[in-house]
Amino acid sequence: MQSARLTYAPLDPAGLDAFHRLVQDEHVRRYMMDGQVFPREWSEARVRESHALLERRGVTIWLAHDRATGDLVGFCGFWIAPSFPEPQLLYALFERWTGRGLAHEMARAAIAHARTQPGFAEIVADADEVNTRSVRLLEKLGFERIGTTPGAFGNILLFRLPKAR
Image 1 (tube, helix red, strand yellow):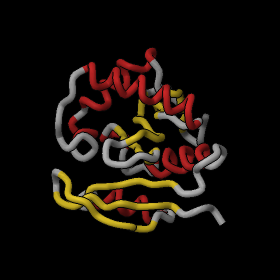
Image 2 (cartoon, one colour):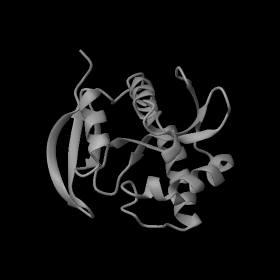
Image 3 (tube, rainbow, N blue to C red):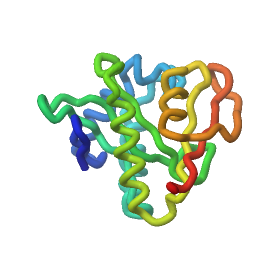
C-alpha cells in the first residue's frame, strides 16, 4: 500500500522492533497508550493480533515510512480495542513528523483500503477529547461523534464514518 508521501508495510514479526520503538515513544504514548509504557511482550501480542485481523478481515496495522527517505514515520490501520468488538481506525506518528498532514494521509489510505474489504460499510474510531488535533482530523475525514466514554485523560469521544455515498 502507498499514498502520496508514504509507503506502508503490514505489521509482522519483522516490524516488531520498529513498532515497539513507536509505542515506547513519549509522543505516541501521550494519548494512544494513556501515557503507559508497555513491555515488548505487549508489542509482540499486537503483532500477532494484527496478523490475525489481516487474515480474518483484510485489515491490519501498517508501519508507515517516508517514500523519499525510508524513515519510519508512524503506524496506521485497524485494531480490535478491548472496549469494542469491531476493528477501529488508529494512527500515530513520531512527533517530528506531525503538522505535515501525514496523519490525514495515513488515515485516508487505511480507510480506502478498508472500504475494499467486506464488512467496512461503517468505520469506527475514538480519540481522547483533549487530543484536539486527532478529534479535528476525524471530523475533517467525515467522522460523526456517536458517544463518549470515560478515559484516562477525561472523555474519550467515539466516532463513526458512515457508509461512503
